[in-house]
Structure formats: C-alpha cells, structure tokens
Length: 150
Image 1 (cartoon, rainbow, N blue to C red):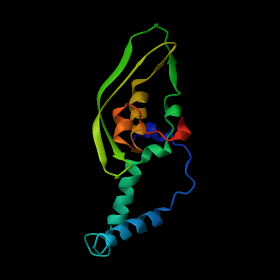
Image 2 (cartoon, helix red, strand yellow; image 1 turned 30 degrees about the horizontal axis):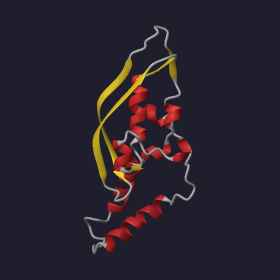
Image 3 (cartoon, rainbow, N blue to C red; image 1 turned 45 degrees about the vertical axis):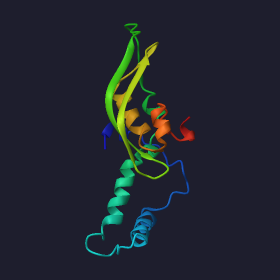
Image 4 (spheres, rainbow, N blue to C red; image 1 turned 45 degrees about the horizontal axis):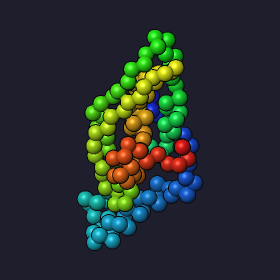
C-alpha cells in the first residue's frame, strides 16, 4: 500500500466489526454453503486469502479523504485554471452483490486561494472508491464515502 496513504489512516468508525478470525470463519461457511469442503487442499488457505483481498478492496473505510486533502499550498502565482487528472483507472465494489465495478475516473477542480497537490488528488481518489458503492453513486460522480466523513 502507498506509504503516503498509510500516514492518513484513521480509527475504525464501525465498532461492530468482526475479528479477522470471525471473517475467515464466515468465508469457510460460505464455501461449505456452496457445496465444497474448505478443509480440502486447494481451499484450506482460501478464507485467509479472501479476507486479505477484502482488506484491500475496502481499505477506504480506514481513511478520511478530508485529512488527505487537508494539506494544501498557497496559490502564490494566482493560478485560476482547471486542475485536471484524467483517465485514472478505479476499482470499487457493488454494495448489492459485492462484485467489482471497474472504470475510469477524472478529477478536476478550479483553484482559488489554495492548491492541492496532484499526489493528494490521486490518493484521495483511491480512498473514495475503496468502499461498497452503488454503480449509480459512482456514475453520478459521488463516491460512496461513509456519512461519518461528510
């Protein structure tokens, strides 16, 4: 994971979060429900791998985009044009089926008194799409940032 992003980690917002062991047990239960044996050779490490994947897929819950974007620079040159990052590949996850939503994002803003560094914009985009989301919230340019961040 990006070292700069790790510096912006926040405390867990959801206190009912199960332990890693409980999450791995839930994955094993789903494998059994599907009709397979989670103890067989090919599946015995699958619960661990799925939980690792989920940690990455939903890593946005651990970061506050307001903190990431909080470091700005004075606009000493009075730059007043659009600042634009184009064609940034993103991955999110549908909250209805927990399936991937893959696309391309564009981030733009018009500067005034302060400027945000390009690295902060790209990091904030990473955070904003690492949540469960609806395709409409993504298409509507509204990342599914939890209400606690608004």
